[in-house]
Image 1: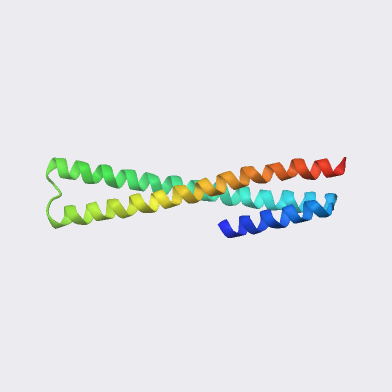
Image 2: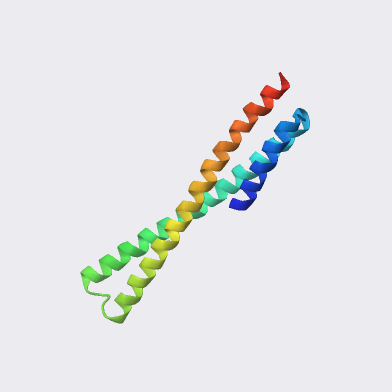
Length: 117
């Protein structure tokens, strides 16, 4: 996804220099709509994944505090907590990239509209 957005940004910059406004505006609206949809899907997945990570950490802590979870099971849960935290961090980073670049695509609307004038 990240490479797709970067490739589209290079494309739109090149096309803006050519000056085809009407066709370019329609294409850009479609692409931004697609990227917005992708961003929404990734937001929902990221929130669900982070929620599961927090829930797992809380369950591990409660289980350890209550004395229900100990020994090998506790080590497995701690490893799972760590893995989930790392994966959640990677997903947050990916969503951060999507959010910032989709926001950046809005600037190209302004540039295309200036070509019309």
